Image (cartoon, rainbow, N blue to C red; front, side):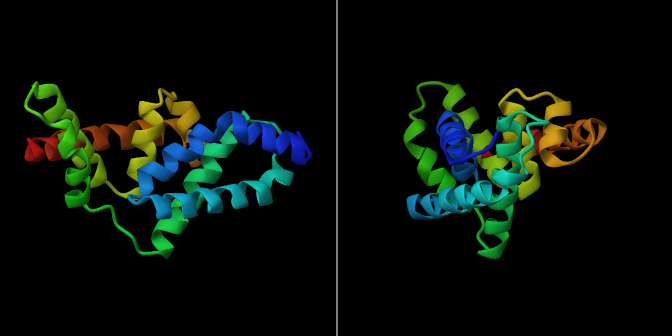
Length: 162
C-alpha cells in the first residue's frame, strides 16, 4: 500500500482500533483526542515503512499501542481506580451480579501495567497468541506465559472490587 488516499481509506476502515486504544489508556475526552492525534501522526510517519507483510490492522495496533504507551509514560498519567469506579457506577444498579462483576473486572484491568492492559485488550479482541505476539513484538510462548500470570492477577484483584 502506498499513497495518502490508501492511508486515509485504511485508517477510516480501522479507526475503531485507535479508539479502543485511546479509551484504554486515557480517561477524559481531551486526553483521548490528543492521543488519537498522536497515533494518527505516528501511523502517517510510519506508513511509508508498511510493506504489507502483516495485516494493516495488526500494524496499526502495534503503532497505536506503542504510541499510547509512550504518550502515557511521557505524560506520567495513571488511570485511577477511583475515576473508573465513578465512570462505572451508573452500570451498577444491583439488578444483577453481572454488572458488579463487570465493574470489578474493569477496576482490576485498570490496575494492570500498561503492557498488561495492551495484552488483555488484544486477548479480549479474540486475537490468538501468535497475532498478539506479532503486534507486541514478543513470542507466542511469552504471550501465553504473560496471559496466564495476568489472568491470575485479574482474578485476585477483581475479588477485592466485589
